[in-house]
Image 1 (tube, rainbow, N blue to C red):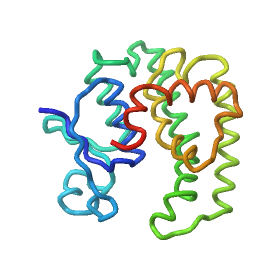
Image 2 (tube, rainbow, N blue to C red):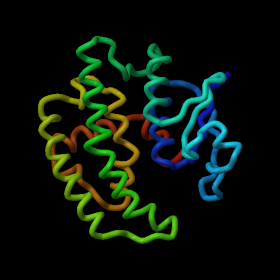
Image 3 (spheres, one colour):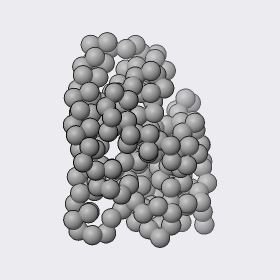
Image 4 (cartoon, rainbow, N blue to C red):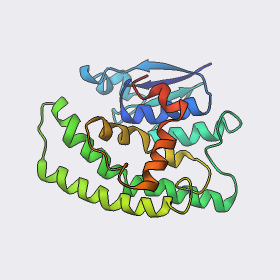
Amino acid sequence: MVLKLYGFATSTCTLRVAVVLKEKNVQFEFIPVDLTKGAHKAPEFTAYQPFGQVPYIDDNGLILYESRAICRYIAAKYASHGTPLLPTDPTAIALFEQAASTETSNYDPFVSGLAWELKFAMWFGGKTDEARAKSLQSQLSAKLDIYDLILGKQKYLAGNDITLADLFHLPYGAVLLDIGLDEFSSRPNVARWWKDISSRASWEAVKGGI
């Protein structure tokens, strides 16, 4: 049975899973969930994703939610498919987990917050909190200065091989660029890394929506 991905076509977290599926050459069926009509809060959805968020997958009866957990599962189950995205050596695993934690702690809070303030808040009838947006951008800028130092010593965040940790950055980074906020190009090592990961065929295939 083909893996089923339930999500919203342009949702950042749905795209995070989709790019990994493409990178691993795993066939999947996309089942759209219409966030604009509240389908993610309907009982038939929350029966599988109790928090009412996208995405979740159904892989031959295994129901799994949280995009990064899904990505880890895909990379592990389909390890022999496509690009290796999870290391197996203990030292490399530790460096991968460090890089993955860096994305979660030192990137995602700021890019997701900026995406909300500068784009998504208006979709839901809100307005931008300019002071918060300014603070988030300043914090992101400081974090990316450190990224530039790290990426000046190695090709990717966990070393010289691409991993899930790199791909996790793509959806929200693309949102910021789409709304005209470019914090990448002024930092040479970050710019080189971003060009590398964002030009991959897997991302090209899904970046405009599934």
